[in-house]
Structure formats: structure tokens, C-alpha cells
Length: 418
Image (cartoon, rainbow, N blue to C red; front, side, top):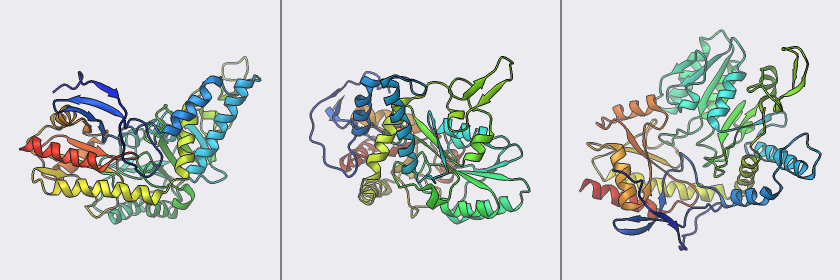
């Protein structure tokens, strides 16, 4: 069922107010067999819409755009100040310690591949089978623990794994599942890791847009996130954390900006310390500035109100699905576990791609279908839910999401099954 010919346009619409920073896209209208409908974006977990403040920050700097660092001109100086100020702002937002470094990357996948590059030889990486591929695939010879049934099982499993290791270790774990939205027991996992002399890296891609993150409070050593999931879709991410591994590793990319001095001999190269050491080439200044603008506005937002609104959306959808027997909701830890704005489900006898295409064509709804770059986890959850569908559908919320979007989704599913 193709959706390629769907027409979209922007029209003035009255958007209900929602807590938190404003985002773009609420005025997009799509044509459906029912007539024009305001687009219901329920695909935030893949990429969130652009925050107004990110759009404004980019537009403000664009007339002055120039290459950063080592430029004496006024434009280069201005962009350099903006770029380095962005680094500081994002560090504050994630609760980085004063001695931590912030390296700009392309996205969380890039950040975690950088993290894998930093891991010293002889260090074992311990992770869980429930991770996104970005935190599953980069590691060399990892110890992959099974998906735990409860948060307590996750802590106990890690305790047992680390107790049996003689080598130094890095624990790599998500903050919130990109499949189910369930929040993992990060502080407890960090406590266990440090008790065994290990370090811990947090994939905060899904957690940071929905909950305050504080590296110092959680006691995590490294943190990765993506701008495009944090309302700054301009191709920027970060890896923040301890300086020693960053300074000891060879550059992630070799080239200008990372090198301090290059001699005539082939191997005569002196490298900058981190973060420049791992930021070779001209950086994505606009992406960094956009990300910092969002972080600054979110830092002043009412997170309690935002979380309450999100819980209302999630509860409404989950309760609605519970009255539809054919819908199987996926969960790692069970219905009572705290979660961010993600609800993933499958429908017996219906391919997920057909479900998402039906919702797009007839109801102007955007959801995600498939295995969500978490194939082992999603397949296991589908099997555990005794669902015949090979893939699932994911609805996800964030700033600007409305109760009407949830009600429309439920109406669409009921019609599909009628």
C-alpha cells in the first residue's frame, strides 16, 4: 500500500497548547480519503521534529557562517565562539563533570562507534541483548547478557558477569529502550559496574528527550546522544565523558583539526588532545549550535509537566489497546515499569507494514514499523507475546504530541480490524 503520492502542505491551524518548547510541523496537512487531516506525527523515537528554537538559532548564525578554528576573520571568530559555547551548553545539559570532555559526533551510532574506538586493549565490553544495534554491534568480542525479565534481574545479571571477569571492563547500556520506552536501572547498574572497577557508557538517545539526564548524579562515565532525537535535526550528536581514554586513543578520524603538527616523515605526527583529537575535518557548526539551543531551552522547561503530559498520552494509548484483543503490546519489564513516550505493538494476522501504511493513507498518521534496529530484542518480545506477526508497529510521542493523535490512532486500528 503505497503512500508516496500523498500530498502535504502547511496551513494555519489551531494547535492545542502542550508543555515544553514549541516544535515545527504541527501545521502540516495531508490529503486522505477522508479529506485533509492535520498530520499526526507518532514517530518521535526515530527522529523528533525540529524545535522552533533550533530553527531560529540556525537562521541567526547562517549569515555569519564560516569555518571554525584557526581563522582570524570576524566570521570565523564568531562561529568558533558559537561552536565552543555549544559544547559547554550541551555538557551542562547532560550533567557532565568539570573534568569531562564533550566530543561532537554525527549521531549516537557515531558516538558509540567512537566509544568502541576508545576502549583500551584488554578491556571487555559487557552489554545486553536488548540494545539498539548502535550499542550492540560496534564492540569487539563483547559479553552479551540476555534480555532481563525485570530491572532487578538486569542488575543481578551484570553483578554475576563482572564478578567472573579478571579483565577491566566497560558496561554499555541504554537509558530507555527504543522498542518499548522502558527505563533501565542506570544508577544501580553504574553502582555495580564501579564496585567491580568497571566503567559504564550510557546510550541516552531515547532517554534525554524525555527525562533529565545528569552524568554526575547517575555516576556514568560516558554518555552518547543524538541531536535528531532531541529536536535538533541538523546532524549532530555527542559523546561526553572521561578524558583519559579519549586522550590515550588514536584519533577516531585522521586529518586536519585533529593533528597539531605533521612532519616530513610518514609517521611524524603529533595529535591534539581530545576533544579536537577526535573531531578531524570541518565540524558541523550548525548542528552543534542547534543542539545547544534546544538543550538550553529544555534546561529551563518544566520537566514535571512534560512528563505528566507524556504519561497521559502513553496511558491513553495503552489502555485503549488493552480493549482490542488482537493487539499485542510489547514490554521488557512489564506494564508497571516507568517508560518514556513509546508504545510498540503487533496485530495478529496483520503485517506491520500494512498497518502503518493504512494509518498513513487513511488517517494521516506517521508511525514506524519493523524491528527498529533492535532485531534480537523485538523478535524475542514478539515471541514472548505469542504474536504471529514477524514485525511490530511503534508509536512514539514527544513535544507537541496531542491526545487527539492517540484517539485517531485507536480509531484507525479499530477500523482496520472491523
